[in-house]
Length: 114
Image (cartoon, rainbow, N blue to C red; front, side, top):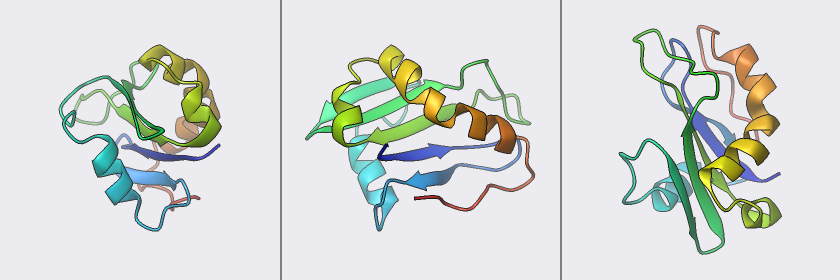
């Protein structure tokens, strides 16, 4: 279960919630999403890594009324199983859904997890 996870909460801005074991997750994130920064939904495989972005299932919005996107850079065997945005929703979202449900309403982002 190796991935970088970035999202925002109801009142807190974008944060990395998982770093996938990377010393600098932003570098890997920026490379994975290069050229598709503005796309609402993304599935792209490059160099064995999958960039994945989708709106939070259930249509959650932040305090400004914006849809909260979920962004992942997926590595390893899990990345090999993801061949579409829907695959990502089906296979990656369940790994973090309960955690996100608990934290998105918190006033501050939780600390970064490995």
